[in-house]
Length: 302
Image (cartoon, rainbow, N blue to C red; front, side, top):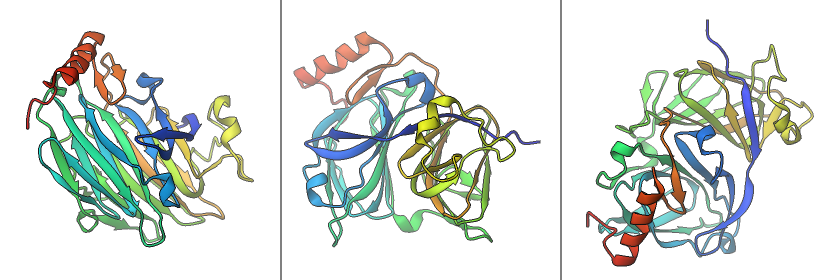
């Protein structure tokens, strides 16, 4: 019998400035690393006017992590120290493995209405992979499988497998699943996943109850202030949910539909030394990375 995961923690994403002055909301990052292992950070960079995002993310380094960019509206132009360049458009995903080091830029541009919607997730790399060659997996909207259920639920499978459909992002060490799930009103959605995986959900439209209905108040008191709908067990836009152990997640909708990112991965359980865009295992490795930046020896693969 499947064990439904309870809510361990709820966080409302917080306004943050990043890059050259991009207004975004950070769901988590730069704290409690072990709780979210193997994930490090999730940013919601939805903006309704160019002044919120147009300055972008000019040239900056990464080492030791993977950055996953998912665009819903507008596009993001990118380029890097290996000579790659391109545009991430609506519905597209870029899974960048920084590995031993890369210097890149990401410059957002809104759609015809000036809107730029998207998300960036950072995933850690284990020690054995921190210095591998940088790599991109770029996926366009038409390559992402959709699974449509009888009740109107739709699941976009970016990475991992759902109902026999496997996403186009492959060969990632942390064995992640990355799903974009839309559940209509008055529906129940369940999904089974490995019990050992860390599981997160980030709501960006509507609201739903992300818990076992037989025990609808099974989350801790820390999350109590974030339940702002008439039903106190529903969570809405900009809510990040961290789940406890179990082999199944469940969401129930009532009057509202809900859309959320469902993200899971295998914890790495290694020490984390983190400063800005570089994440290593020790402070000495971190020091070496920044010394190499200053000495122009950071890039190992051009």
